[in-house]
Image (tube, rainbow, N blue to C red; front, side):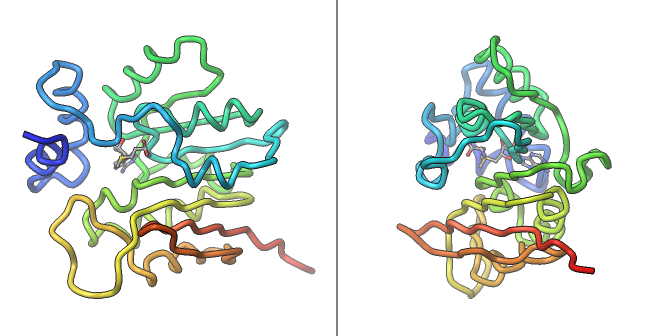
Length: 207
Ligand SMILES: C[S@@+](CC[C@H](N)C(=O)[O-])C[C@H]1O[C@@H](n2cnc3c(N)ncnc32)[C@H](O)[C@@H]1O
């Protein structure tokens, strides 16, 4: 059975709980996690060209095994990274025992109140698309609310049309544009090789 089949089998009627089951099975050696790759997301690496994170706080949403979080830490960011799966967070801490990243178990759909607009940079890489379409609007709103400065959204793209039989549930143009709520403005939204690379920035209120 492929890693994608493992993910699909465990998703049945449990939109967020199946991640923990998948990570637990992976720890037991009976399943593999499709996104368990060592290198950071290439579009994040491209975005980061010339970026110095020194003195800036970054938040990585749905961090999994920490590939993007570790990369941002290497750029000097003070990184917090969270995932709903306690097993994933235990595993990432074990993989990176000397990491400067603060790895936290948290739910995007109910994040800690003190995180609201607390981060200079938020990176959302494939978490919203891992949730059923019915949860996309709520998850998107939460991602935007965590962003104090810039937001980078990386996701698989699809056209408008009938909902796919996920997971995953790639994002439509309207779903990507929806991150521009709650005071965030789009800086650039592009589609590259079937993926969204979308940047948003919080607008400063002028008095
Ligand atoms: C497709 S994986 C992507 C992982 C990571 N961003 C990467 O690219 O390696 C989606 C991740 O989001 C996490 N996740 C799903 N729902 C979540 C939620 N409500 N809150 C926090 N994390 C969540 C899953 O446990 C999983 O690690």
